[in-house]
Length: 122
Image 1 (tube, rainbow, N blue to C red):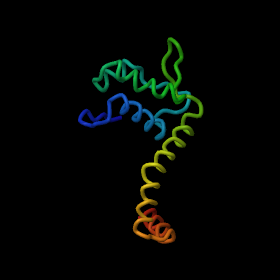
Image 2 (tube, rainbow, N blue to C red; image 1 turned 45 degrees about the horizontal axis):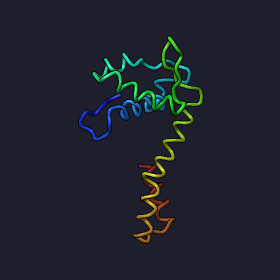
Image 3 (spheres, one colour; image 1 turned 30 degrees about the horizontal axis):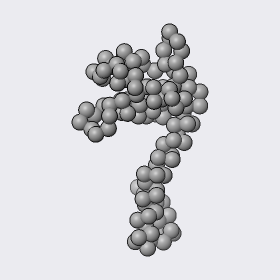
């Protein structure tokens, strides 16, 4: 995980997103322990409260769960939940604007499909 202290995105959101990325990429598997708040804050030189806030976002989303006295673990089904969440974000951030712009430019759907196919093959 890499944190960008110059970014407009709050650090706690970067922590949360970074852990999501690591789960999606297989660094942390379901039922596997993730680094503690102390380990995260030391590794990235951030306030423990900031690390906790980022992790709590994942706890609230049932991506991570706490085992009292042991640590934080990736929840069962977390990978699928994250994929669905990110797919919806992808749709909202990229597909809808693409479709809106293609309508303004009178680009036929077939042409869009052709371009997408071309993009996938490059």
